[in-house]
Length: 127
Image 1 (spheres, rainbow, N blue to C red):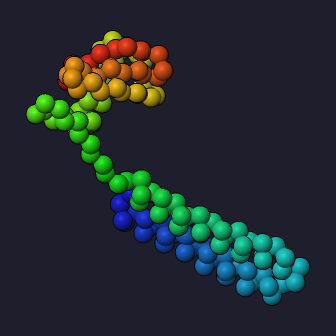
Image 2: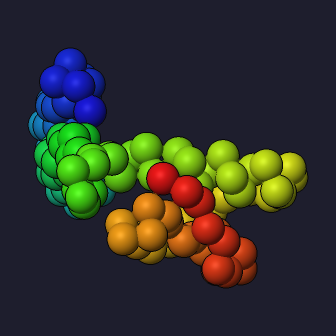
Image 3: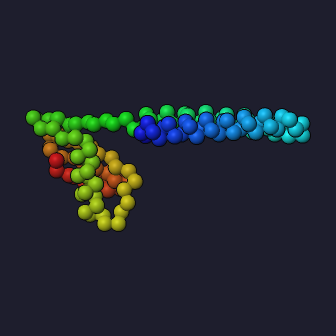
């Protein structure tokens, strides 16, 4: 998640907390809603805390990792292998949606075997 998106989430969380604090202060003047105001303030603070944690988690999730398989003087990225698997699967299954892919790389064969959605077993892609 971009820094600007994280900032927007944090700003929104702060606004929620400020509005809740104002509502609590106003409600404290009216004894009949004092209990409800206190609960609203607690809920708003929990929501703000949750939003900040979500922003932090989203930042971690956007970390970019690139992995390569090297064998016998050749190098191929795992992203390229995954793309080849997707292309091969779609060529055979025009309507099949991909929900999960398991890839088994065999560099000595210059190939990758894959399983899509737990079904298409033993399919081979040349690398």
